[in-house]
Length: 471
Ligand code: HEM
Image (cartoon, rainbow, N blue to C red; front, side, top):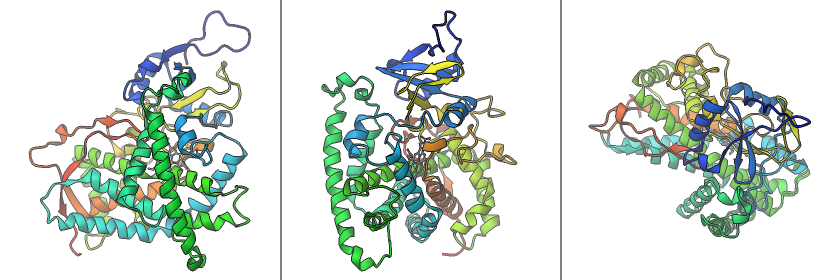
């Protein structure tokens, strides 16, 4: 913790301010990590007009996300959440309160249950197999843009799960929506700049939300027309939501059209890039660490054999693959600063007074590198650090929180993790992977691109060779 000021005002002191908006740069998780190395794991920054607490160690994260979770469980009002999320009608960007609680209940009990994860298993199986065949059809020896392939595969799986089907136009609109929602928006930190809209984000938000709205109306309308023929047989999330519109068990939510559309955007924003980005980071690390790649592939060969592809029932037996995923998420959490929180009341934390409506940023990226929490070299990719360790991704181990923790922790963990395991496992099992001629693992650029999910700056180009015996 920062040292307390020597002259204390009456009552608990405020945390002294040590930084401002200019210090964040283009990769804020890295800049904040450096600041924390100097000022400690709990810092107070003034970002524009917003008082922001930044947390950068496992112990401090536990303090805010467990001990004081009830006080820090809201989300700040942002321009994107207001303009694009139908006045914050859904869940991910909504303020804490009875409405959020009902929406969360609806999501966890109706949409993101283990039963629904299983229900979409057949669809995932077909989609992943189709991409394996596509890559194999390249004849071998040809360079594949793995980033693009994995992005497209996860997009197809997510869109089928939510909408049943998609389209090219859809991708363009959603990409733009994610870009403007993920941008660092000055208007959120210096509200009087909103009228000037210096970055042009406000205008882009309005434009894209209009396009999204038209698209959502079109797909919901199609689903409503075919709902009668489905006879209660739900094929995707929209079917489920439509059936809940008239039902008694909508968990106290008035599931109107705007709420459904806001929820669709939440699910797309949360589900699309997070899964694909994790898979490509894992591939990049495995290419840089051939020993780990070999070990993961040998485990797949021993557990499954080279006569068939991976099935979802195999995934629980793939201990090393799961360690690779944890290690990837430790070093490359897709949301390195999680999703910002806001305090709903005045709180005293470690003798410091933190006023109501303070913003809370949890630097999961820095926590994954906290030398007090991780032995050896925390910067080194080493999946075996999880051997004989109880640490999992559930949010109960604060040194590893890529899905967040506490009341606002990710409700899509099971859904997201299952897709990551299947896509990564299948591609590692079906192919041997090499870098294109003349490129060595040391040349591989590990630069990042900041956004709603922090992806690799460069696409990953790889040469696959089919590895299985049978078709
Ligand atoms: C690898 C995959 C994923 C990762 C790493 C991830 C990560 C996260 C993180 C860090 C948060 C913020 C947690 C916090 O504030 O403590 C979050 C929230 C959320 N995630 Fe995920 N997520 C993933 C997949 C998914 C999927 C597939 C869905 C649903 C289709 C989903 C739905 C949500 C929702 C609705 C929230 C907002 C929860 C709330 O505010 O109450 N996520 N996720």
